[in-house]
Amino acid sequence: MKSLAKDTAIYGLSSIVGRFLNYLLVPLYTAKLSAASGGYGVITNMYAYTALILVLLTFGMETTFFRFSNKEGEDPQKVYSTILTAVGFTAIVFVALVFTFISPLADVMGYAEHPSYIWVMAMTVAIDAFQCIPFAYLRHKKKPIKFAALKMLFIVMNILLNLVFFVVLPELYASYPDEIGKIYDPTIGAGYAFYINLACTGSITFCFYKELTGFRYVFDKALMKRMFSYSWPILILGIAGILNQTADKILFPYIYKGENAHEQLGIYGAASKIAMIMAMITQAFRYAYEPFVFGKSKDKDNRDTYAKAMKYFIIFTLLAFLVVMAYLDILKHIIGQDYWSGLKVVPIVMAAEIMMGIYFNLSFWYKLIDKTIWGAWFSGIGCAVLIAVNVIFVPQYGYIACAWAGFAGYATAMTLSYIVGQKYYPIKYDLGRIAVYVILTLITFGLIKFNEYILDNIVIRIIGNTVLLILFVSYIVKKDFPISPILKKLGIRN
Image (tube, rainbow, N blue to C red; front, side, top):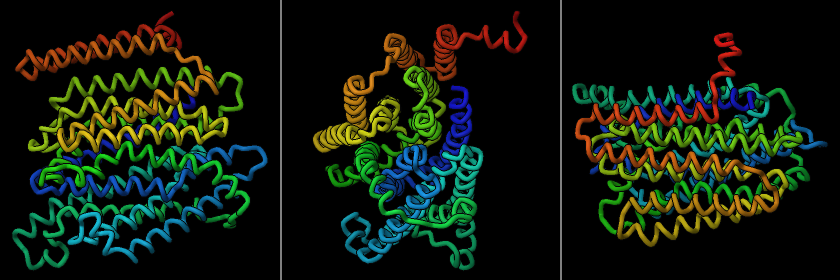
């Protein structure tokens, strides 16, 4: 548990700090690209596509790498080389196909006037897919510091270039259009976000020199066949899982009845960014937990450890939920004021993210017994629920239906995984204590909303919410994180 906590802290630092720095792009984009222009809606839509394509191009090989590199009788280096070759080849074929069919693709996706958006993001996601394997190798080799450093390097470069092209150059162009016009074109607008992403992603590849050299590249067909039989259900699971996150943003322009689809999508996408603190926590936990679980699977006390990890994960995600809701009056300034109408989706999206994290935590039972087909079923059914809710309710209710669709999809997958998992790989989760925390969270959330209703003064409201958070944290410390043993170890208390 100490090892898991340490790695989660390092991965979490890069994830949380990185996401926080990335949040600086949200106020930048929402300030420079008005909601009415639909520019941020375009960014939201394009990144939804790339998230789905990334899952397709990696086809479950990250998890497969951890599983087979820890299997007895398998050569970890051969596993790494075979997966690296397969993913790299797939990425190259994908880019070639995109360039071949760029015109019809741009027409279908609604970007006939900007086909460059398509091929730029195709190259970016192809490189990103290839990089996923060296990043997984770093996690396997217990090198979280290099992993975190490269993630941070990408984000810093990305932010600096965005500041140059969305702030500095537009200001200079207004005064010196002839000179600055040689390197900056204001008509590109949101497209600069995609060009910058490609430049930064490509640059990071050179930082994997040690992970990509110093060994003989081999492609073991028999090994690849065994790995693919393990990974294809994970691919289905991954597709369904990412569709749970992106299907609403992909489908919205097609099923929304109004003419301002990109404007509404931009509002929803910007407001959802505030809720993404939950995704940070889940991602940090995932980076550390995946290699931890497969490394721990041979120990006799593994199920008790998994149960404890689940409880602590839920405690901290519920606390994060309350922190965001308590200080939403401050956090809403992350996005432009004309996007604030979407803030009503924040608690719904955060609750959905919590269930997604729980589902990820639950998912290891079928990975450990090599029955990954169950994950495909659970995620597929959850995805079907999400798509159905979107198609049925978005035309009438708009983007609020997108938020509830995600909630329904994750709730379905989470519930199915728990019920079936208790039959095939029973784990005694502390459901009683978890239920108490959920109920306490709901009560605290209700009081926060009550403060919002009765208190007009923001300062007083924030003070009241802070008191509620202190009470919640006090309960956590008393019941699950007693400080007396810690103080004794530090020599502060006898």
